[in-house]
Image (cartoon, rainbow, N blue to C red; front, side, top):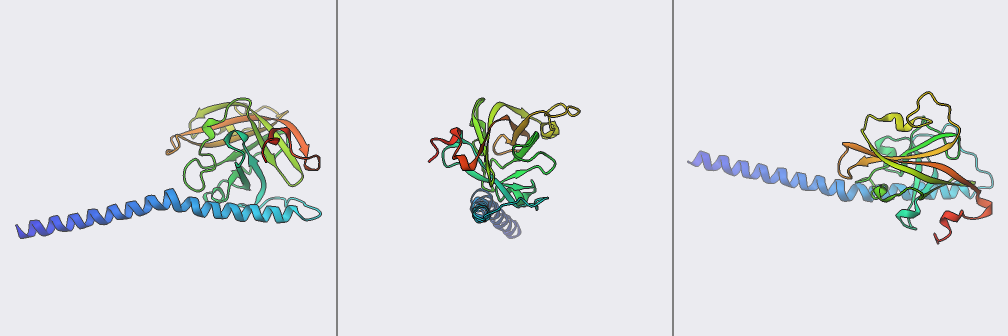
Length: 220
């Protein structure tokens, strides 16, 4: 009986320790990764702001992984939605903002400018991306230009459906004739069993010297 009690006691302590470790892991994932991601995003934002204040700004070719080069604004998600776009979609890149798939087009270029972001943890910039609707504006800001895209459709696909990154999504052999923007994220929010995709096309190009684009007229 004594041995059984000791065994039960040991098992109870083991379960308690395991529960504590699990709790700490959850706190890290749900809270601390967001804190760290926001800190990194702030650093990217400040670096871009400093760079863009220089008299002449030339984007480095090619951009380094993790390097910021633009901002994404989605008015549907609030006037304060403003997240840096960085090069690459590695875990460390996506903790600094939303990430540009390197093999895809650049903002405003003919082809498919494709971007990925987290819906949960690590800053969760695309947490509410499922609220975006057809006709909504997506605005990309670079050093010199505002690019306003208009949402065409949203779709749920399998994680293996990489055709969404094609220059003409779903038509791997087609020659692109339009500038597109595709946003990708996990679906549902707390899982990775599917991907939520937002497809859009370039509607307006506005030099920053001309002021803010109409899509951001109320974003003050």
